[in-house]
Image (cartoon, rainbow, N blue to C red; front, side):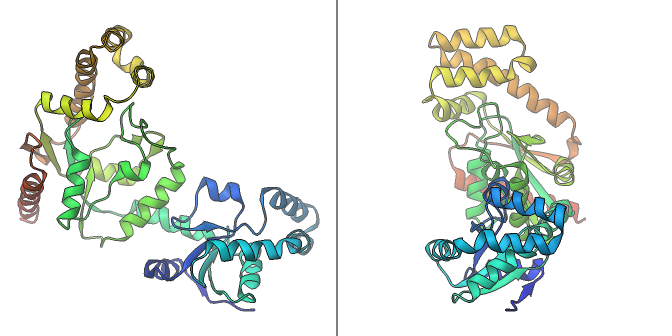
Amino acid sequence: MAFPVLDIDEFLDFSDKGDHVIIDARSESEFAHAHIPGAINIPILNDEERKLVGTEYKQKGKDAAVQLGFRLVGPRFHEIITDTISKAEKNNLLLYCWRGGMRSNILGWLLSINGFRVKLLSGGYKSFRNFVLETNAQPRNLIVLGGATGSGKTETLAHLSLHGQPVIDLEAIANHKGSAFGLLGRGKQPSNEQFENILALKLRRYENGEWVWVENESRTIGSCALPDAFYSQMRNSPVIELKVPLEVRMQRITQEYGSFSIEELTSCSEKVKKRMGPQHLKMALEHLHSGNFHGWLGILMEYYDKQYSYGNDQRDSNTIFPIETNMQDFELLAQTIIDRKNMILRQLNG
């Protein structure tokens, strides 16, 4: 049975419409490592079966591997159909495997004869990864929201988005807040490959000429690394910097992290021992364990502020545009930032 075979742009266009379910036919471990965002996993071969078929291919060739694949998966046809019916809310399916070969074709045939309308991705997940690498490397118009630790950058980005501004929240994609304390209160981070996948689809929403807001980040956000070309563009983009008084920033951080245990805060603090220095860390932890949260935080803020200043010193000072704020009115702040952005763009456009 023949199915429509789509290139990656057609595949993603259908995905955007929201009336198709994306099915990943690869094994459970392949899917867990990284996949097309929004896909559900219906493995035609599980991890163990995939290894057996791979061995058969190397030893006896493609035909023998295909025959073994059918022998292994045949007894599970009913289970696969039942699994698909339970997971797929719609009958329109977008299907892929690693290269758009045996696995997706077998699953496509099986689902088609059971009433599903199937479209296959030409080149499979590999073609999607090529799209991801190309998309993340494309030149972009980025405008960076900066500010020292505790400046409320994430909340400000959310308000800019509510004002219709194009925003990509890199910390949300990485599921990490960017500092040594970034995993507190959060679950597991995505793999670096999955981080890149999500970023590419976020970027795809915007035209190449559109100015997109991102938060000022280091090269890594927890265990996730920004693509080199994208990070380089961030470092050379204009920055609107929130200048927030230290005490206001400390109050915000206290509200955010004050509920975590001393053990959790100690463990996170120790992650910056090498860069902060053992004596400074020792003093900070003494404050923390004696109940002096403010003293502990003050030492850490001094370290993070130095790190932030060092990062800013590597930028062209003419590309940094400060805005002083006490973070009391996000609506007013968002409008002020948008006005400043428009002023900067007029200057850049001459």
